[in-house]
Image 1 (cartoon, rainbow, N blue to C red):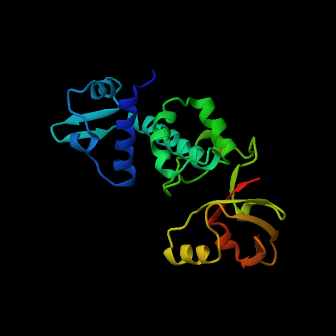
Image 2: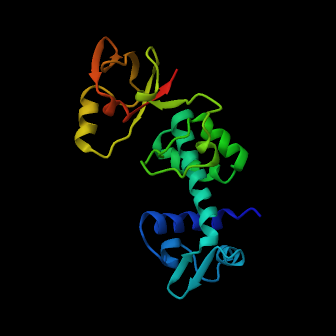
Image 3: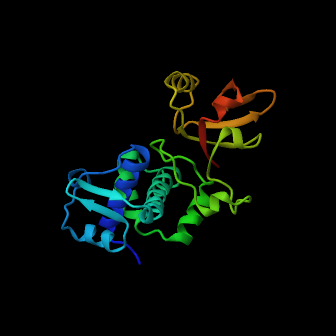
Length: 215
């Protein structure tokens, strides 16, 4: 049974508040709904949620469906940024629309195309799918960390993924900014990248934080 868009969005919010924020109960106000709303009744009929006067709690039966909805949304965000090269201001609105169109086969194809990304553009984890757990990939990633590409690889910096502000500032000072063209000219004993007419050396740990859109 396919859920309505509104019911799916409620599941997403419940999953985030439960799994990432540690809340057990989420208020109707936070979910922008009410006890008598059709989407709440829809989720109740499937035993995906419990409802009380204080709000809504995600049941174990609804956890997997909610996780799948989060996965589709965050994969859609990665697709918008990495492949369609949309600005982040346009990404969220379009990702919300696109995620509702994805079904399992398309979702896995997109995930494989993107190289089974672990994080969305906001740095939040993308729940792994069945395709992520397979030992072989069906397609080469469009976006990959520098640590995972071969010598001679060319591309443009897609994004920097680090929560360490000092490391982020260091990478930016090196000239590694989104949209900058780079080429991997050495991998051992250290990584050497060519940026324009300049070359920079990096250790492997830093290269894992730099993701490039491959040519």
